[in-house]
Length: 198
Image: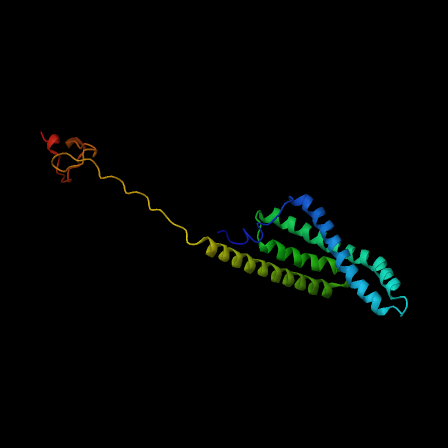
């Protein structure tokens, strides 16, 4: 079984890096509009006066949900851009790319608020992405362990042993290279085969 990040990030899903940025921005916008629509619908109904709760809720969704989707798209596009940059620079895909991209994204999006906000946003972004990547690792390991248990232990077949070398009637291997007296050093003590004696 592969480790995570081969797993948890086997990382780039379906789209290659340049196109993944646009793809993630679109997905983040849709997610922000959907979630923001539900949130602002509930807030609009709660804050509207009686008799016009539905109209107030729909107006709140129409005004605020696109802005929430845009904020999500900005975050997703910035994050994916940094992720692609780190993948290109480090020449590998692992959870550290996402963690560093989250830190950079948090810092960049808080840049208008000053240095302290940049540092705080970077720390929070890296921490949140670290939690997400850690959770992905744990889930992938649990799923891998469960799949291995369901499949059962793998049967390993041992290779067949090699046949013994062929020997002559004296038990000496016949495929052994012949030795000649001219190949022996002065101090060598070697018992020559019977056919090499002279």
